[in-house]
Length: 100
Image 1: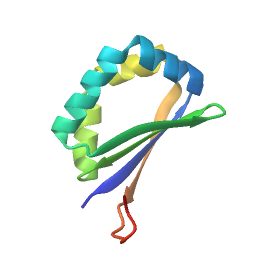
Image 2: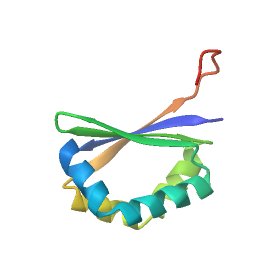
Image 3: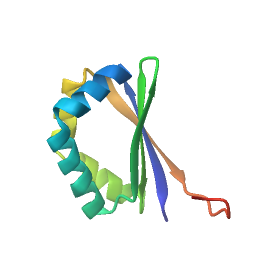
Image 4: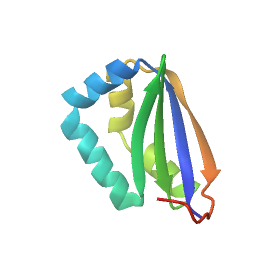
């Protein structure tokens, strides 16, 4: 069953954007591997000291397998100054007629 994964980070959104620019090749490779592993959607959002990673995956296990075995993600989070471990939540994707 498709899930929406929300990963919350304590981080400065501007620092995350700067890290994304300086490590673009690594982030693009992580994204490519994520798509190969089953990710359907992926984006970042931020506000005062908080950054969200919002993904759509086929199921929780597929995301967790990818995340747990992707060595570059912790390095990028450290480079961006993320404080503490991420908080990960999963939501069942609802079937509604107004999706785009």
